[in-house]
Length: 343
Image 1 (spheres, rainbow, N blue to C red):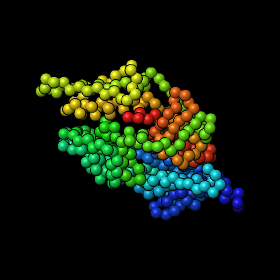
Image 2: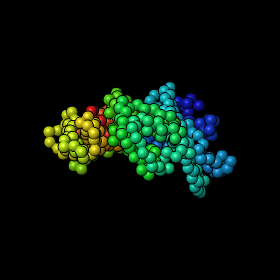
Image 3: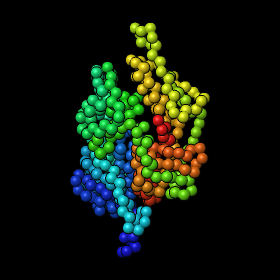
Image 4: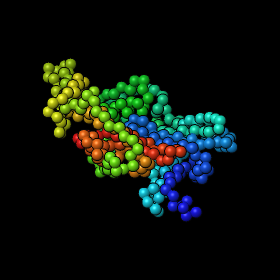
C-alpha cells in the first residue's frame, strides 16, 4: 500500500453536471487530452473511455450541453509528498463518438456554451461610433459569457461593418488588427494585450540536455524574415496632404524588408498605431518553435519561459498554445511557442 501511495502519478479530476465522477472514470480511462488553444480558438477537452459494460451508451450517455469541470492533479511528480493541481476550467459537451470492438466512447467538450450562436451563426451589422470593448461586451452577452477585458487600449471606430461573419470571427479579426488577443475559457471571453503578457516573468527555463524534453523543433527560413520597419501611407480623397508614418521597432536590424501598408487612417496617431500593430503581427511568425515535455503542470497558454542551449534560438518565449495529454504513454505536455518581441 505504501508503494502505491508513494508512486509518481497524475490524476484526472472530473466533476460532471455537479457530481464528482473521478473514481467512476479512473478504471476505464484510456486517453485524456486538454487543448489550451491559441488566441481566437476555443479550449477543449476529450475523454476516451473503455465501455465494455456499455454504461456510457446506456444509461450514462452524455447529452449536448452537459457541464464538465476538469483538473489535473500530480502526486509525487517532483518529489515524495508533493501534490500540485492545474485547474483546466469548465466545458460543455459538444460531441460524442462510440467505436468498437472493443467498445469505447469519446466525449468532447468545449469552453463555449454549445447553445451559443456566437461561433456558427453569421450576421450583418453596421457598428457606428463604437469602441472595441463595447463590441466585446455585446458579443459576450450573446454568447452567454462573462467579459474580462485586460487590454490597456480600447480603440474607437467611426464605423465598422460586420458582413456575413459570426460574432467571434468578427471580434477576433478586429482585435487582431489592434494587437489584442481573444480567448474563451471557463465561461469567460477574455481580451488581452500580448505585448503585456510577454513582459511577465518566465515560469521556467527549458535547457537542452538538462530537462525532461522528449522532442523539439526550431527552424528559420527566409520566408519568415522579420521586417525591420513598417510604413503606413494613406491619402484622404478630399485632402491634398498624405498621411505617412514609419515605425521602426527597438533593436531592429539596419537592413531588411520594410512592411508597406496603404490603408485608410484618419490621423498620424492612427497611422502610428496601425504600423506598430501590423509589424508585430507579421514579425511574430519569425520565431516559432515547438516542444514536447514529460508532463509539466506549470505550462499554460499566455505564460513565458526561457529557452537555453539551442544557440541562435535561445531567449524568452511566450506559450501560444499548450496541450496536456494522459495515455498509455504517460503524461505529456506539448507546447507551441514563439519568441517574445519585447516591444
